[in-house]
Length: 364
Image (tube, rainbow, N blue to C red; front, side, top):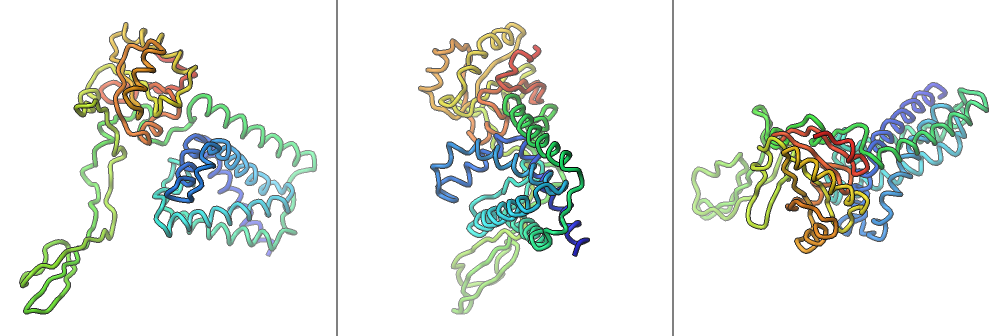
């Protein structure tokens, strides 16, 4: 039993630290996922949406700290009870999302590793079993450091998590796993590779032959002989590959200008998923940056999901000499974890990307 507990302890501790760190690297992204869970379509508790960021930071810091506590053997009773509570909650959450097909990506490992809700539910079941082993064998969880060493390590891990979380919120994630990271070409990421897997779809035909109703399942050819086709249903057996970027666009009221702008040699994009929620400090920093970029021959545009009245209001309020174009809010939140943020492109390749706190670090 002691050996089984120690193996479970190592696996659970390491996984909690890894999973928590990946989300701690991007707490704003995790908060967006929590907002999705809190929405009307999923758990229907929109009252929690305003607190999503605070909850996200608390959860990921607690997740990492619990992993550290478990590995060093600090307060085993508190640690195991906390782990059990967290895994029961997340197991319920992933089962609910999977069974009712509410959320396509659970967000357990951020953008580093995409898991479907069913995959995440399976992972949580395994963790639940391992944590139950720890719960039963608590007496075998022994400290690996002195009393002072345990307290110091526990405190330092908590301080380190809070400090790192604050840093990435005030700047950008230290590790970027998204399809808009520096060095990526957006046009290439919008295409499928030549060896991409196509979706496998079954066609279920309902038809009559000699006055008798029949069904046939095939890949789409249909029955060779029939009196009448009553109907056909399709079912995706295996999902096909999709491009890394699917919904990025730069649109005016009249046309799609995506390719036109992605072909430009020097392009600066000011990204604000919501001008209503944009930080005034960041908006105030834009004017000087825009003038500097335009003097160096860059085209400057804005991307937002806000409407035309708000666009004009913001341009007038901050004296901004560029036009805002339309893009999906979820895409803009993915591009840069700041509101506003700035992305510099050269023929569609991301050369620089900064939080509004770091606008003065841009080089033109």
